[in-house]
Length: 387
Image (tube, rainbow, N blue to C red; front, side, top):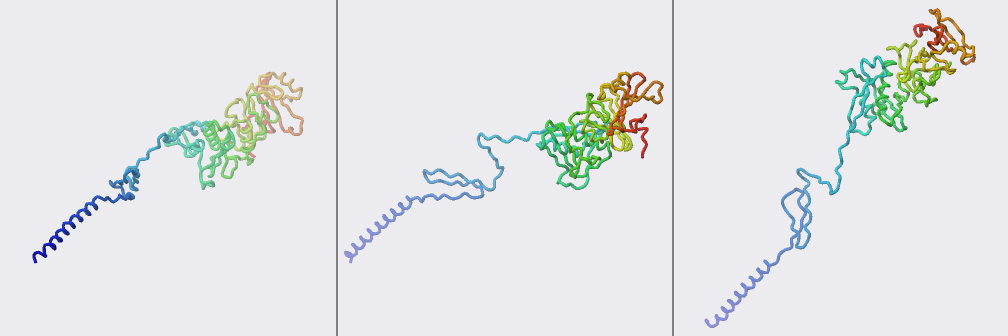
């Protein structure tokens, strides 16, 4: 029995030893094989994990988290960072008490700063806004008062498409305060816009597109001037006017024709009769305005001559010779020596006009031209009676 068991026991031991050896080899083989790493997307929430690329492969770029703290944008190499918008200074012209009440052409500038590119439009915006509280204490006041709803979505529109011309159209009603207030408004607008080198003339329109404060109803500001000659000392006095200004013109028409605003000599022009003069450039010329139109022109300047060449300072004899016996001689009221030398035209068109030389008995002291009866009034507007 013992003999028969030895082979069996020996076989069992051999098998056991063989199994252990095989199992150990399998285990070592399994441990020696590595599973290749698999790349995955990074989390949308930033963390400290990294992605390991397979050997020899370029490492993929990390995706930034959608939740970032203190993000910084870095400009590309060689790129130029945009510069801040440059600030520009513009002037805004306001009338000022008491000077502008005595001379409506007087306006005074203040400075405003802006980063806007439309400087002319900005200047008008500031003019409408008016002076600051501090500026008001110095006497400056707002010449433009608007009311009502806009018909264009803003206070105004400004057209600069025509070379040299600024066309300002108000989209709200402009509240007028009378002839002088209207004139102060125009002067402030003109001065504010004409500071820019590309603007030489200004047209101001109301909400309906008509010339602002044009009482004639003829929209004179929109008409092309018929004569480019301006009123100067070289302008000649004729039976029907002086230079480009004719008898019968309104103040607005005469101002446009003369190239200079006519201003009232009084603080409150009368609708019955008022006297005007050029705001600048020419002294010794006065315009009598009755019923809204020029009825007479008075000359006190020695520089201005008539079409025939007569002027203040000429002798009576020289003046008579220039008009070849066409002057009627009459005594000057309230004078023992003074005379009137009056030229009476013969044409049907001018039969109601007169050219009059006032003398001291020897030389011409004053000249006037106008229509009857205004040209004959010794005291000017004081002699005019309301209808």
